[in-house]
Amino acid sequence: MTTDGLIELVSRELEAAAPGLPLYKRLKTAIETAILSNALKAGAVLPGERVLADTLSLSRVTVRKALGLLEEEGFLNRRHGFKTEVGSRVEKSLSTLTSFSEDIIARGLVPGCIWLSKQISRPSPTEMMALGVAGNSNVVRMKRIRTADGLPIAVEISAVPVRFLPSAEMVKDSLYEALEARGFLPQRAIQRMRSRAASVEDAQHLHCDPGAPLLMTERRCFLADGQIVEYCESRYKGDVYDFVFELQR
Image (cartoon, rainbow, N blue to C red; front, top):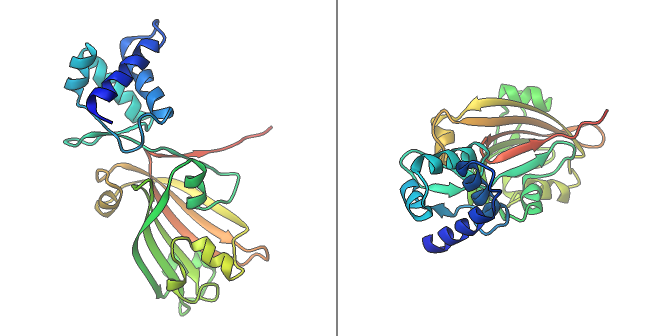
């Protein structure tokens, strides 16, 4: 979308926003509506604060406050010295066991991955405890960047005992497809979540700043007979991934 087209779109949404709201909230609502309607797609670049302020006849303070709110809620990604882009938030329900690809497809996005490594090796102490395997056994360890519409969402490290997956080359795009083909598709999982700061390596992979907040999950996946088939550690960008809980009384 051209800058003129974007300004025209935001102008229309701005006029339609509730008149009783402060200007910065009206602008925030206008841009948010354009994003939710998919008129502004993930990865679209917004003009700078000065351009938005001048063309929309608003103050830069108003524009800055609106963009700040959108960034806090994950609708926009802004890095110092870089352009402002439309983000791609993904909601993940914790009540069902689904793969990353299934979550992304369910939201109308295209899942993808960038392989960093696939190898057979001895398990780490953490993997030994999580998988219940001996130190002299072998696991297939896979590290990759998970993407949605080409944008990096998470760094994922999975370990699977070789008795379930004898070769790393059996995994193409989907680990679960490879496991299902061998009759070892996970049926349930136990997952733990915590926060961590992005390392320099994480920042390079996820296009964020070092120290940016990440949501880290550790998941153990089980077969129907109770065998542990996978241990997975994922580091999600906190500004694009939401975990949703359903609570009942």
